[in-house]
Image 1 (cartoon, one colour):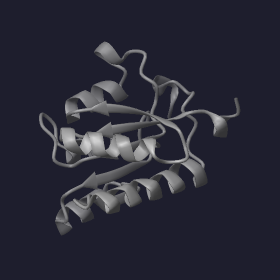
Image 2 (cartoon, one colour; image 1 turned 90 degrees about the vertical axis):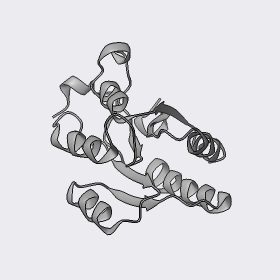
Image 3 (cartoon, helix red, strand yellow; image 1 turned 120 degrees about the vertical axis):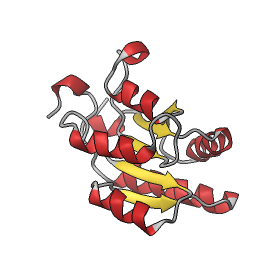
Image 4 (cartoon, rainbow, N blue to C red; image 1 turned 135 degrees about the horizontal axis):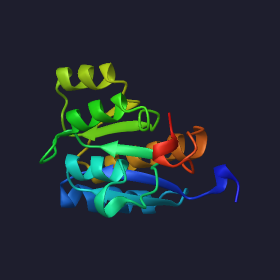
Length: 154
């Protein structure tokens, strides 16, 4: 299978069960099949990305959907750690959060987030947002190769 034909992996870092379900359903309804890996807090996300503990065989995600308001380690810290790590900093990150706080928006872009999207509580609008993410990031954009093990990136 060619690199652009392989199944893409999205890491969804989200603690809200309802949002997880809705985002997974929205991604299932898109035209680009993908694997969605869910981590429910910032510490688990970093464990996954660093292939520690139960995640030693984890696949490097092609894209990260990151909530800012997370338990244990919030999304702001996760974003800063990812972008400071030469093995991880090339993974595109979309902040998908309820926060419309200008400081959160500015700080996220200051940390080189690829996109900042405020979650819609309107189901149709949320599905439209996810379809837009899928269309651009999984069909149009050329993403860094994920076959390279995390420890060899950089």
